[in-house]
Length: 272
Image (cartoon, rainbow, N blue to C red; front, side, top):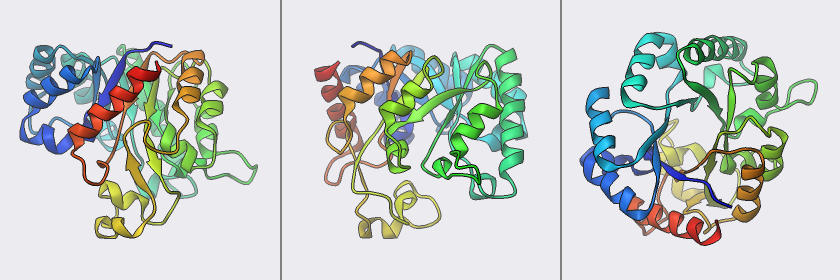
């Protein structure tokens, strides 16, 4: 098995905020081939493009919130053309837009409309899941499947977050195979524990950061948790994945973010 490996810079956001250039240089030295953006860290698109070019990393993709797409899709297009990203992913839905709420239907429509506009401008658009999209409707269908059946594959691809898929109750490898040919990007993320009410507090959502220590759910570097990455990576390759993307929302207790990124790629290099 062999696929290039990128890192979601959100995993290293505090380092990137302090010194983006040095963070990218370190990541390149650890062996990563590319990166996925999640914000600009106070810089312009032109400045980001220069920093990435100097690092030697490939700007594979970017997480762009639906709010930003709704607000100014032309700016999104202009910024990421400047940076050179080919892929753009919807990373997250606020509570009012999630499955089971009145806003869900409009969110699906808006994702479709934005994906159409971005595709027309040369981007490949994906949706990055969490666990709440594995909520079932009255027909017993997962909301994530409803999303993918509602929007044509040529407009919306699958960026499966393998951690949240498993937390949501599905086998990540099997789910990747279900969408063979539609999964250019795969998030490799590991964890220990299981679903709890405070999971998103670990990524600073809903003001629950102070409760993180109470939950059994904790992020781990790739290969240090419950996931079977040999199986997942084999399935991802079979499904047509172009890039593996490492993401660890919070570091392993007692380790720095950069230590975790080093452990993750070291493990992946040992199995790929």
